[in-house]
Amino acid sequence: MIRTIAGCFLCLLIAAGCSTKDKGENINQGRLEYRITYETDSAHRKLVDLLPHRMKLIFNQDSAVNIMEGFMGMYKLNSITYFRPKKCITLLRVPKYSFLYTGKKGEPMCCFDPLDNMIVQRTDETKEILGFHCRKADISFPDSDYTYSVYYTNDFNIKNPNSTNPYKKIEGVLMEFELNMYYFRLHFSADKFLPVTKNDMNFSIPKNYKELSRDQMCRLLGRYLE
Image 1 (cartoon, rainbow, N blue to C red):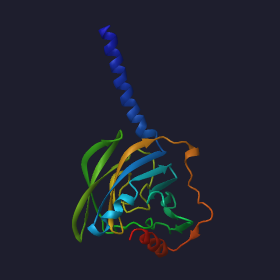
Image 2: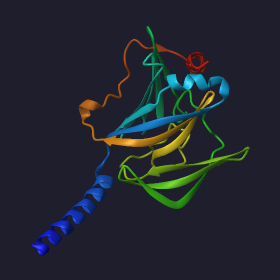
Image 3: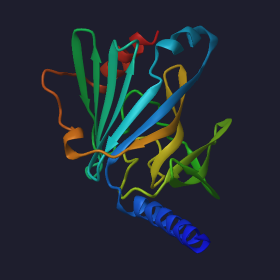
Image 4: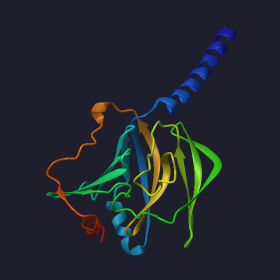
């Protein structure tokens, strides 16, 4: 009896180890969900409750879409990235209107600070997030004393996952990171992963969206954050 229980326990350990390995090697599509927290100045602190506090990232090997909703569902900001051509399309939907900006090849996604002077210092530190092996990188800037850390994973079979966001120097899917948008510093922490099917993924451009320039899109979104 004892040998049987021990044998079963050993089999469970082996199975768990195999499933973790397979998880990293075979996943090339899915949905990551992130918790968003904010830092801002006192003048804009009252807006934080109305801003998005969740982000969904739905991806496959070719494309990804970031979905953020805010102001009690009054607006939706989506960014569709196509990894191979390294292009991003930004979609903004507000009451009664829908707008679109098509980025140029290699151009960072609209409405977030590009963080052009970012210095990435990779470390040997790691931790597990949602069962994925994540590496730590320290971020700094030559003209600022502000520093922070990000975590990313190479467990997903995706190339150029950050080709249109400020972390293009990092080859890995971001699990914990920061972005700046207007007066706000956004902290993203992955807290859920779900498998998806092809029916769950839609990276096509919706119809009836009005095309804007990058400046027009940024100004329009900024009006909702004043």
